[in-house]
Length: 272
Image (cartoon, rainbow, N blue to C red):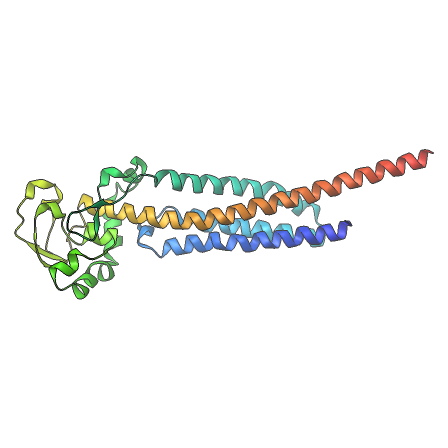
């Protein structure tokens, strides 16, 4: 393969890497639109890393077409660094979301969540709950008020498949024995000692169970679900980036070996 065709191929591969970086940026942007963004952690590393990988890939592509060796050297050193950081981010996001799942409640279609089921790091990360709570309340009209519009009868609500946040923040724990009036208004608890959350429940529509441990658990279940979804996209993109980088390195190495062999053969013939 001639140097020109190799440069074109490398430039094309790097342009493909630039395209592959877009889903990484997209995953970060998607996370920033979800309730889990109230944790304010994973979305920005993905957006920043995806943007840097996009810039480096375009730099590598341009350097191949323009035959700029310095830009190519920058690409060869920067890309594996960003890939390694991205691998760490993906592995970390997976590791801290391994634990935590909903518990089946008798005669209920929805699950309830226990804060102690989740990883120590996630529980530590929501230590400043007041800020997260305020963030969640900005979306209350969609999260809790919609339940009142959809479910009028107790049995309809008990059979509903509601989200972890709705389960933890918009209603009291089932074990408390509250009587249903509507999804966000409950009276006459029969077992207030079942959980500390039983006393934290309030029919004040600005409070509800947002200070409950169940709300924190529901929020972490939401974080887990959103991070796992974004991890799938980022992992696929990461595999693509590794394949592209390995292909570029292979092409450069092959061209270098061919160049050395050509020089050696010419030197041998010149000495004959």
